[in-house]
Image (cartoon, rainbow, N blue to C red; front, side, top):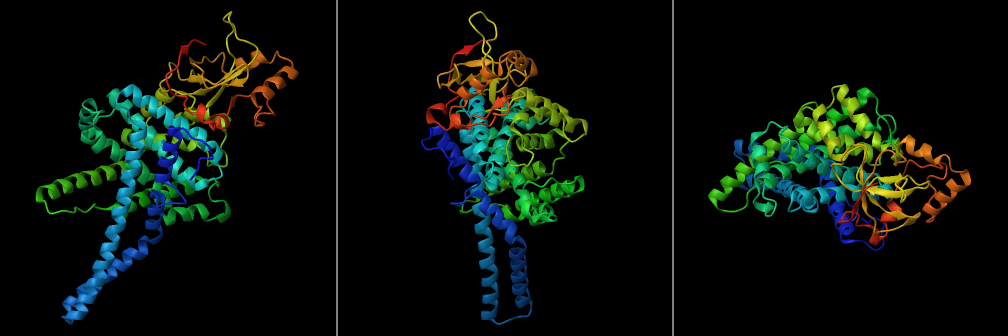
Length: 473
């Protein structure tokens, strides 16, 4: 997989590798292991069952030794192959979870927020050029994005003491950010949380769930909008698929070794992990635990491409869509509120068009570009941004601002102020800002936003999250 960038910063290379762990057409990845399970589950389970039955019948019938040995060999060979495949899936799943945590967790809470903002922003920006790569978006970008959001929402809820989970709260309060390999919060909660997000997302690969998508239109299954009844059935089958993957595709990870105490400890930890994953996968969406998984999933499905009705200009409306779902009783309202307290209205990596202030402190009659680059804005409608242009020229040495609604062209008052400019001047501004030849907003003299993927494709522009001067604007 290649993000289509020539030279790359270290961050973009790490992002590319992380996504390849989720999905890659060129190497073994979690997606291929999960898809293999769903494609062959029934046949393999049936073969295993029949081989075991044949062996048992040979024993009961007092068959000859060579017949018994052959029957037993057929069964044990199939059993060994099943175990081998389950271990592969476990290893791949853990690899993905640990890689995601390594890219998003810092040694201090503030560093974790910066790394997470960078990863969320990098995913949104680079996804723009991948809209036609349906499998990459669906099985790499989306599960990665939703899992990361779930981690940050979990931290927020525990910091605010909203979740009624005493053990989780204790782990969070005593977490060890310096040595995560010895931290219960990392090993017994964060890793299972990420695993559950990925397993849950994989459930849609279930054959019956896929059949719902193709019943009426096999040629356009990725973009087809489902009717309400179809959507309910699809979600039910996807959940069943996730549970089936957990029970049969993963199952208990076998212990390999001869140490009795280590075996008992392994079995206890494995039992705890399986029970936690089952609890996460079956939690009702309207409960706090269920919404911990479903709200980030819904947000990711809105802000990342992959749907026929995807509209970059309308991404800030995700908050409105989720709050409407709360009114319908689909999600827990407190968790939706906390998500948008963390994210604000504008997604990380979103391209902002704004009018800068002059030396006199008044808005100038021109506009510049900025990119949302920080979590927890002072107000949801006032994003924390990195300024990336000056005098209509891209720059990579900008500063940070908390952008007010009066200056943000996403909001009507800021656009109305610039309408006083002659059309010729507005076209000059557009041409200056799009000298790379892109004309996405040629039909709009006053764009609401911009897509910064071309800007970000230059390696020197790929670090929007390093320390920079904070200015008022």
